[in-house]
Length: 111
Image (cartoon, rainbow, N blue to C red; front, side, top):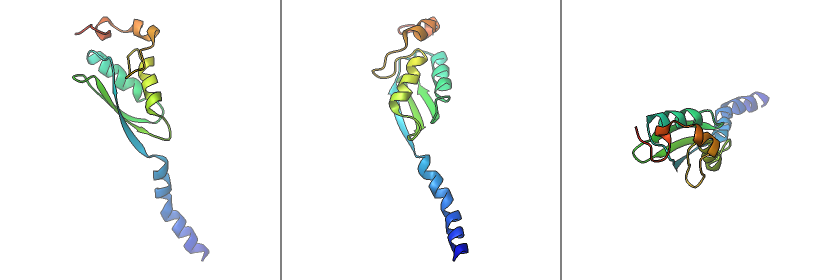
């Protein structure tokens, strides 16, 4: 009986781990302007705990982020984008970081 319990427990392990890494997706509108912005936002977001991927569409200025919902939230992702110097939905860019952006990356500045 003890062996049966161990076998069942081992078979359940993969499913237990899956419940901890439930992913979700959020789309956030940014103030990105150019390819440099795209690289910076995507690069910075992959270092946010729980973010699995981030892809910015420059035509729409929307970044699609896949994240682990138990490790981060859409609000934390917006705040991370702000800390990179960009607006994220209603969260405005951190003024100090915005000032450090290249001119082409600032609102109204295009390549």
